[in-house]
Each structure stands twice: as structure tokens, then as C-alpha cells.
Amino acid sequence: MPRESPESFHLEQQQPQPHPPATPRIKPQLSSRSPATSKALRWAQAFLAVNHIPQLPLERFISEFRLVFDRPKKQEEATRRLLSLKQGNRSVCDHVIDFRILAVEAGWTDPALRGIFYHSLNDHIKDHLCTQPEATGFEGLVNAALRSDTRLRERKLERTSQPHTPLFANQSPSSIRPTESPAVLPHKSPEKPMQICHSKLSAEERQKRSEEGLCFYCGNPGHQVSQCKLHLNSRTPR
Image (cartoon, rainbow, N blue to C red; front, side):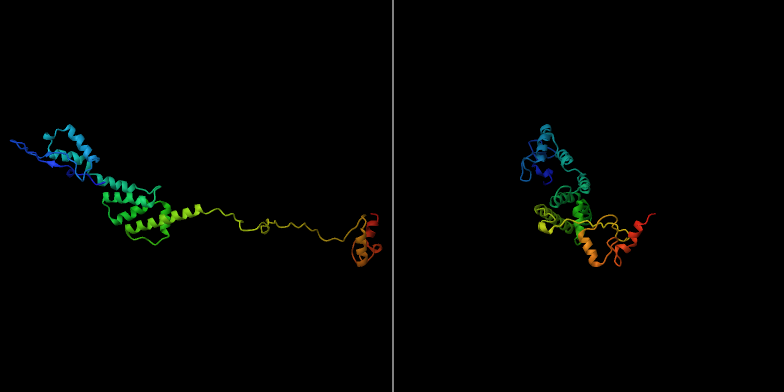
């Protein structure tokens, strides 16, 4: 919005006869630079409604106008707003528009704007900028931030549009084997001679021992039951 100025109004010096006024008088009139909806025109209409035009000096009108619309501290206010401006939930493109407006109003130059603009960006934009070549100057940083924001938004869209694929989606059921726990082997005690005690051997075991020449009592080779020391010891009273 262009800044309003007293020149937006038509100033006319009225010279009624026979006593011309010492100061110009004011006549509000629409102009091409001041649309009917402007705040300045509405203010003037309200101001002139309570101040009789023939008795209103031009200097007072301009003074009152500037007091409202041409604030001396406008640049300081723009500076404060510029320093506190943050990107927030907006895109970098929308953030740049507001940043440029305040930068012009504050009158700041390129070297200072570069650092202020960087600190106004969101953290994920800063992180992505760290992976890119360092930008030169304010305009270079703006272009780099715009590219980073575009790329990050594209990646976010890609992730949300891709269906979730399970880990074993491409494997047949027969190829998926359950994880087997290591087999626990039973604890082996030191080997001892095979003992039969009072149990009877099966027919198959008797046949095997007979063919291999093993003792029917202890299962060891080299002797028969009648010569087995274990058998004899078991029959000796203690």
C-alpha cells in the first residue's frame, strides 16, 4: 500500500473579494493517487467535519496529517518487527515477502539483512542449508532457502505418497524360517561302563552283543558275563 501524503488532497487557495486570506485553504478532493476507500481520505473527511475549512490553516492540516500517517518512529518500529520476525508455519516464499517489506521500511542494507534472514528461518531449513554450498549475499541466501524449502516439501510429499512395505513382503512363506534358538546339549557325566543291573536285554541288544563279542552285563569287549568283574562284584556280599 503506497504511503499516504498531504499531496493526496487538492489544496486550493481561495481568494474571495475584497480580503484575500493570508494562508492557503484546503479543499479535499478525490485524486488518482487517493482512492475513496483510503484511510487518509476518511481521516480528512472526519477531521474537516469538526474543523471549519475557511478558518483551518494549511500548516495545521499538514501537521495533523503527518502526526497520524507520517510517524517519525515508523522506521524504528519496522526495525523491531524485522528483528523479531520468524518463519513459523509459513513457507519460505511467504516469509520472504514479509521480510522484504519490513527491510525496506527499516532501511537495512544487504550485509545486515543476510544474517537477520538466516536466523529468522526454521531449524529444518537451516539444517538443509548447511548441506549446500554457502550462499553469497542476502539475495543468494534467499534463493538458497527457497530451493531448500521446495526440496524438503517434495521429499515430504514423496514419503507420504509411498505405501508402507513390510519387511518380508517380497519373500514367500516357505522362505521365512523362524529363528531357532541354539540347541542345549545335555550335560554329560564322565563315561562309565554300560551297566545292566537287574534289567533284561532286548532280543536285538543280545543279538548285537553276541555278534560283536560284548559282555552281556557291562557291554565291554574282551570277556563274558562269567568273567565280568562288575557282575562278580555285584554278587559279592559286603
